[in-house]
Image 1 (cartoon, rainbow, N blue to C red):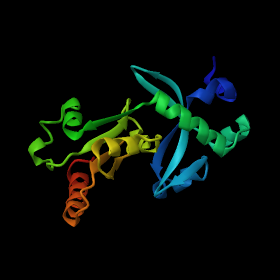
Image 2 (cartoon, helix red, strand yellow):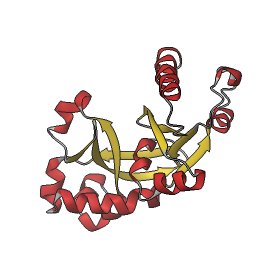
Image 3 (cartoon, rainbow, N blue to C red):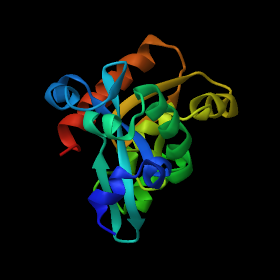
Image 4 (cartoon, rainbow, N blue to C red):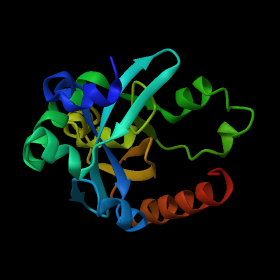
Length: 189
């Protein structure tokens, strides 16, 4: 079936609507054409996951025209994405060490150079647009409760966020700021 035709049929796509987070200021032009919900300095935008297999995902961004075509509101779009995204892209939390091991980056990033602090990576099962997992109901709350600590969320990219227990000290906050700046300067392409 022709994909364009399929996109017209709301019942065929309603279960494939997901959300992701993008930087609001850097995407002002795009945001003028797409339905979105402001979230801190980010924007929640919506997309359709058309196919999802071993080769990857085929997706398309939801534009304002789609809402008119489907005759739904931004609120209805948000509710569908809230139901679908955690189901299609379950969250995944792992320690920074195991994440680097999985990526086989332990040779590139010296693990001894990593701070000796409990640092976790929150993403989704695909590792794509995984920063949106912090919007999933109870994910951060349940993780904080399991650690018995408040959390600090360090934005890493649209694909993941770093999470660490909040020790609440000035020294810790200064170290985190320094760490984020250093990682951005040296390791983030």
